[in-house]
Length: 117
Image 1: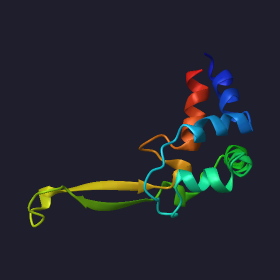
Image 2: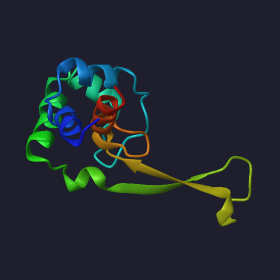
Image 3: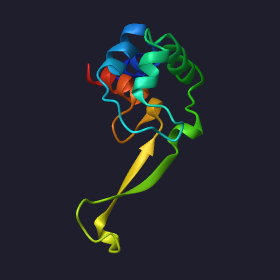
């Protein structure tokens, strides 16, 4: 695929259907640094109009808020082991739900979906 065609695919605005399809398939994970879960987004924005607008603004201005790229790492203890040993804790990185790099969050999932189609 020529570079010009690929850019056109990425620049085209998202529809409500694009965003709703991705949000509907998300498991409700731990709260992110912005304290939001996918449950919150499905409750507050069930038709994904707000999310669609936010994603389209990111495309239009070719910018993603820096705060979306921030993660908070917390340690979770393993069960039934000596917690005084550092190796018995596992780190987990919490990212904002709108841009989860580790799980291809909503914006990145929408963009990836376009490229794979």
